[in-house]
Image 1 (cartoon, rainbow, N blue to C red):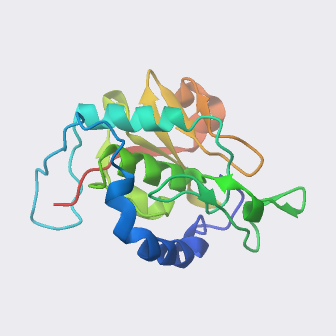
Image 2 (cartoon, rainbow, N blue to C red; image 1 turned 90 degrees about the vertical axis):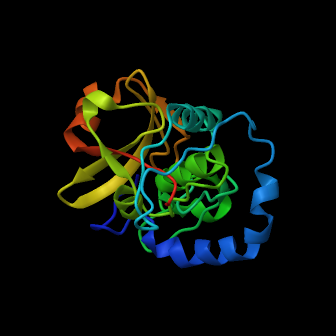
Length: 212
């Protein structure tokens, strides 16, 4: 998470990441081969629309949490992260800087939505692709009540000056793993919704699922 105008988030890098995805797309499935084959593929509960989110299986959500846990300590990189994992970030007019120095262009890592994109894509064997944009991820997923949170669910945060500015991954027991801002590492926050800063910005939880 970094300071940005409303809805700016990672949108400025969407075209750059889309070009990278097209260039690498042919090799994505073999690259995912090491993921445990025992993870069941969730079945869609609705096929009426190709973009309709469905409830993911508990096993898939736990696998998402495992993938997220494996990223602890990876640097934050503005615009970083794709279906293959951590990637080189970049700087735009306002983001990717630390103390006036552009860190994004020299850092391989994740930003907040790059991390959630990767974890869900990897854990689902490519059946869940969220896109690298927090607002799009919110609308691509089904709402989840706070008392029904499960591992793998996405937690979204908002402020009046920056709607839906951040996303993290719920990993169970009230904890969140996220990539917060330039100069930090992917980290775990215990009892995140009891922390005043995060509780005050909580905008809701969502659960991704494969397209029907």
